Amino acid sequence: MDGWNAVHDAPVTPDPSWHGGAIRVHMSPALMAFRAQQPDVNVKPAMPGVMAVKEFYDDANNVVGSSVIYYPDGTLAYYYCYGPAERCYGGSPETTMDAPIWGDENASEVSNCRICHGGKIFTELP
Image: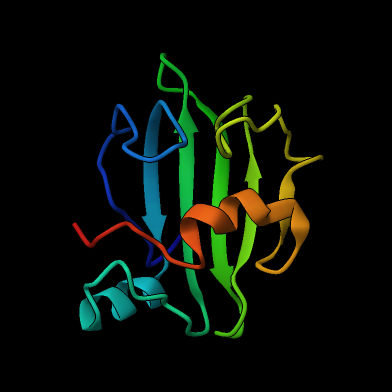
């Protein structure tokens, strides 16, 4: 991911969000630029190219899943998630790359993502 920033050098345990377990967050250059201008994580970063990827880790520090929030054109947020049960959101089933939870912010499939995130990315610049 050329130009991307891994917010943490190693998986962070425990994840302070509802995703549970160890995580690592990566931010796109567009998100880093937005965050540099607007450090308030409660402001929705609705601009083209904003993207964050959260990797989920097991106890042995192996990647077991991932979630993504992406603004391709700066208007709608798109969510994508796969991983063990409970990692996409509290009560989520186990999902895979071939059968993830995904959709734009208006899709019912991502209503549980939208409840907490509401299009916001809560990771701050390191």
